[in-house]
Length: 238
Image 1 (spheres, rainbow, N blue to C red):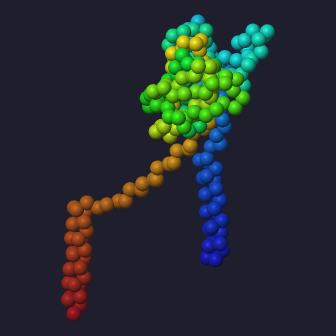
Image 2: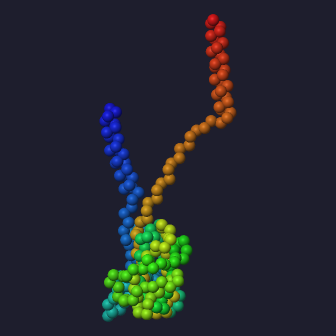
């Protein structure tokens, strides 16, 4: 019986561990905002509502272009400062925390006078050179560059991918994009993993009953009385 139980125990432990891993590991899928606010995978995104009269186009894609003009870019997203000059901002809010390392911002049509700043739910973000990489299939030939706490284009229209790697929290719940446009705005594609890491449950603490000093004193007195009674009984028998 003990041998059978000991043989089954490792198998049961392995099965239980597998079940726990499957329960707490959520398969994340990369989502990109192409339809404006709404539900993408397991996360609902609000904010950055379409307001073309004030320079915010969300979504901005082939459907917003005249049929006679083919959509030139490899993605669709948010247009900030489109056909406008000035300061424009919009905030994206996520229904649950998302992994900051999974965020990917794609920029097209970003020119020298277009200045982009980024904030998360923890405050303003300071970009670093390692955040920026080339955009595969990018139409705008110039690279993105960092100027202080902002991202700007070069003399030509610029494109690139921006990631958030500089001392950021593991997860965030909001992302704010602010653009001061001088060259009619930027197309910004926002992508992220729709599932954050599952929280690790806190260990369950079981309270250990303790006896007060009065209870301990009473038990000691009771034991003493029982001992004296037994001793008296033995003497009477003698």
